Every structure is written in structure tokens, then in C-alpha cells.
Image (cartoon, rainbow, N blue to C red; front, side):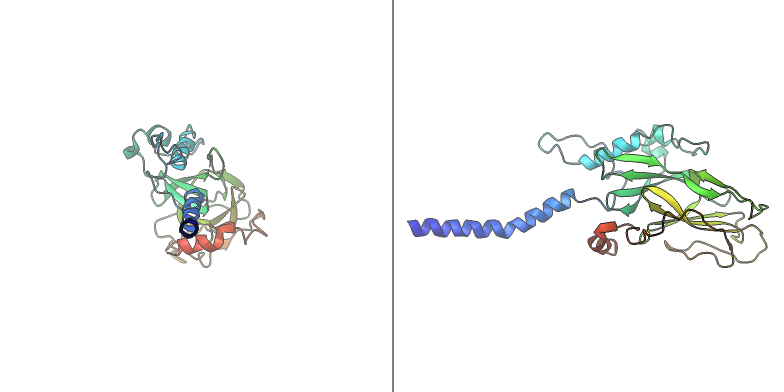
Length: 263
């Protein structure tokens, strides 16, 4: 009898140990920072299940955070779409927001704001669900407001909330902006922004103010090169220096995060 009890106790221990790592892995996966959010299922007001009150907690938190952004986009550069009024009540009336990964739990939310003759217009919100409750922040970007007749040496820095975002490089965590002065793409503004300490940092700014049928440029892919031959404007903001190791989408989670991104 004693041998039988000892045998079943040993068998029970082996059985539990065999499944314990899987249980821990499943729990870790459930609580790990998200590295992708799809609209709308990833950011929605799911009903609370009394049997599992924490189910869809992050989805509900995301919806509540976005709903807290009132008078969208809170700047003189108004969007053509009223996200504040229609985002959840009538989502078919506004374009879907796009969640761009900065690092686990932190996203750049890209919102369509309309289009001009040659350029798409976008506004961007920083979404951080590593905090409780999750928070959102409408971003302002440092920008040189050139026109086709501007003097490159005397253009002041302004702050914009709506700009011509064209691509996002997920490996470097960079937003690429390209505003054409005309449809041929032989003149305009090119900029790269990184994101450090929850703020957009201007890394590169180029301009070609003369539309002369030379040095055409177009955005191709998520990591486009800079336009060759366009004048580079010195960027004074040096907050990005010394932060290359932690910039990009993965930060301290680089090993497992990059493996998922590359799939």
C-alpha cells in the first residue's frame, strides 16, 4: 500500500512538472506587451465576462484611451474626418487607424486626414499601453516650412500635427515624410523622424525647392533611401544621439521581438 501511494505521488509530480513550463509560457504570452494591434478587434469595447473579467482588458483600455482624445486633432490643421465623433459609433465613416509598432506596448497610431493634389495627409498619436490606464498623446513634429520659393537659409522651425507621412520603417522605428511640390516628384520636402522618450525627433531633413525636371524622387518600400542631390538642412535637435541601441521597435525585448517581426 505504501509503495502504491509513493508511486502515484511520483507520477503526479512528473505530470505536473511536464505541463508547468507550458502553463508559464501561456501566462507570459497573455501578459506580454503586445507587438501588433489590428483594428477594430484589437482596440474595442468588449463586454466584461464575469467569469473572466480580465479577458479583453487591453482591447477595452485601448478603446477608452482613443475615446479620450477630444476635438481631434486639436490643432489648426484640421482633419477631413471627425474621428472623435465617428471612430466607435460610426466607424464606416472614418478610415481605419493603423497601429505602427515602436516597441512592445507602444505604438504610433496613423490617422488619415485627407489628401491634397499630390500628398496624403496624416496625423499621428502615440499610444502607450505599458501604463495603466493606457494613454494617448497627439504628436507634434518639428518641421521646416519650405515653399517652392523659400530661401533655404532663412526658414524657421515650426511644429506640425498633420504632415505627408509616406512610409514607416519598423526595423528602425522611423517615420518617413515626403511632401511633393508637384506630381513629378522633382521638388519638395523629405524628412525622417525617430521616436525617443515618446517624442518625435527629426533625424534628417532635405529639400529641393526648384522644380526643374531633374532629380526625381519617389517613395518605394518601408525603408526608402534619401533623395540624392537634394539639399540637406542641418538638424539642431540632437536628442537622438546615444540612443541607437534602444531605438526601433523592440528595445530591451529585441531578440524575441525581432524574431516575430521577421516571420
